[in-house]
Length: 94
Image (cartoon, rainbow, N blue to C red; front, side, top):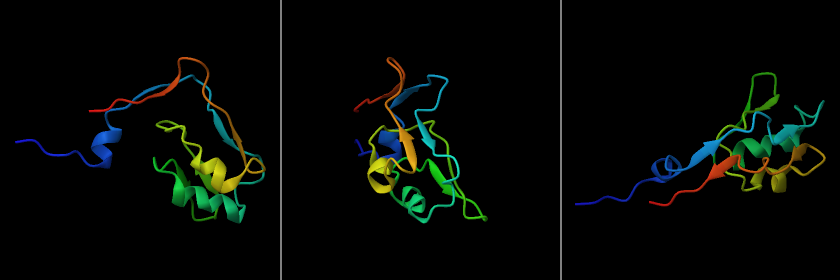
């Protein structure tokens, strides 16, 4: 008997190789910008969080490189680029 894995199970199949340098950065001084809070809501990997001061923080480990945060927030708030060659997410389907 087989069961279909949920979203977390499917994401757990992916492999992440770090480059040592974050490929996404919140632009300096923009941590409290109201539009940046959208990244907390839309990031499918849950990499953004908002603290009690209203500042949004980012941990790019586990990024799916989908660009959803860039679409929601724009380049005026985020520096976003793909990771260097060989680094980043490797999707595995099971």
